[in-house]
Length: 124
Image (cartoon, rainbow, N blue to C red; front, side, top):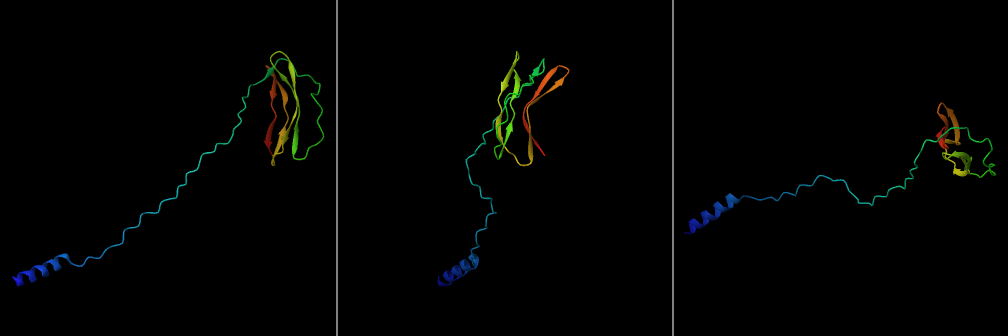
C-alpha cells in the first residue's frame, strides 16, 4: 500500500507539473473621455427680407455722423421703405473687426425698383 501511495503521489506531481502564473494581459489603451456640458453659442439670426421700393429714397441725410469713437465704426443711418413710405433708421456704432471694412447701407436701382443693401462687414 505504501508503494501505491508513493506512486499515486508521484503521478499526481507529474501530471500537475509546475504552474507559473502569467501576468494579466494589459488592455489596449483607450482615449480618456471627459464629459463636459455642451455650451451653444448664442446665435443671432436676422431675418433678411429683400426691400424693393418703387421710388428712390430721400436725399436728406438721416443724421450727422457723431465724433469719432476709438475702436468703433459709425454705421450710417438710412431710409427704410416700409411698403408705403420711407422711414428714417438711425445709425449706430459697430465694433471694429480687424481685417474687415464696413459697407454702409445703401440703395441700388434695378429694373423692378430700388433695392436696399443692408450694412455688412466685408473682408479686406
